[in-house]
Image 1 (cartoon, helix red, strand yellow):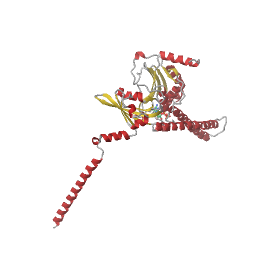
Image 2 (cartoon, rainbow, N blue to C red):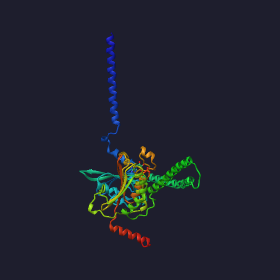
Image 3 (cartoon, helix red, strand yellow):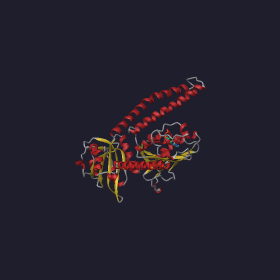
Image 4 (cartoon, rainbow, N blue to C red):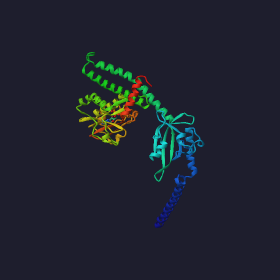
Length: 428
Ligand code: ADP
C-alpha cells in the first residue's frame, strides 16, 4: 500500500514537471516573437526609425551627392528633401569652424571620411542654413566600404546649439565671478603681508606662523581665480593674443636664466640643450635640414606662461636630479621639451592630464599646491598657434613634456616682419 502512494506521488511530480516545461517553451517562443530580431525588421520599420529619429541622417555617394535626407536633417538645415536630392552636399551644407571661417576641404568631414576611410567626428562646427542663419552642430561621418573602397558615407547631424549656448553662459559666469573675486583676495594678500612686515607690526612668532599660513592659502586662492579666469578666456576665445615672430633658441635661453633660481634653490641641476641630438618625436626628421634658428609665430607672453608652467611642475614634482629644457627642429616643426627626473606620471593618468582640474591623487600631489588648470591652459594656448603638447613618462624615473609648433621658414619670417613693421607705421 505504502509503495503505491510513493508510486502515485512520483507520477504527479512527473506530470507537474512536464506541464512546467510546456509553459516555459510556450513563454519562450512568445517572448522571442515579441523581441526585435534584426533579421525580422521590415523595410517599413527601418523607414519609421529613419523618419522619427531626431538626429539628422544624410547619405552621400562618393561624388558627395545626397541620396538620403531624413526629416530631422530637413529641420536642422532648413532644406527639404526635394531641394537637396542628388545635389552636392558641399554646396548645400556650408560648414564654418569655431572662428566662423569656412572649413577647408582637408578638414571638411564630408570629404575627409572618403579620404581617410575612417569615421570622422567633429563637435566644433557650424552649418549655414537655408535662411543663412548658423547653427552649432556635431557631425559624425561613417564610411561605407566595398572591397576596401569607400562607396558612400552616412552623416549624422546633431543640433548642439542649446548645449553650446549653455556652455558659453557657464564660461561667462566663471569668468565674471573669478574676475570679481580676484580683487578682494589681492587686498587680503596685501594686508597679510603688511601684518607680517616686522618694520610695521610687532607680532610674536606664533601669530607670524598663523599669518604665514593664511597668506599661503590666500595666494593659492588668488592663483586659482587667475587660472579660472585664464581658462574661461581660453575657452571662449577671449585670451589676449599678440603673435609675433619669435626665435625660440634665444627665447628659451633667456627664459631658462629667469626660471633657474627656483630649481637651484631645491638643489636641482638645470640644463638647456639647443639643437639637441634628439630626433623629433612623431615627425619625420632629416638631420641635414636642421637649421640654427627656430622661428615660430606666437605671443611671447603666452609661450612664457606655457613653458613656465611646465618648468614649475618639473620643479614641484622632482625631489632630486635635474631638469633639461631642449629645442630641436625639422623643416616644418619646432619641438621644445621640458624633461625632469621626478616622480613620473602613472600611465592611466596620462590621457587625462590636459583636462580641466585634473590632478593625480597621490601623496606627492596632496602635499604640493596647484589648481589642476595649468596644463589645460597650456593646451588651449598652443592650439591658438596650431601647436600640440603631450607627455611621455615613467614612474619614479621622470617625465618629458613635448611641445610642437609650426616652424616658419626664412621667407615667412621676412613677410611677417614686414607686415608687423607696416602695421606699426600705420601702412595698410
Ligand atoms: P597643477 O600643477 O596646478 O596641479 P597642472 O595642470 O599644471 O596643474 O598639472 C596637473 C597635474 O599633472 C599635477 O597636479 C600633477 O599631478 C601632474 N603633473 C604635471 N607635471 C608633472 C611632472 N613634471 N611630474 C609629475 N606629475 C606632473
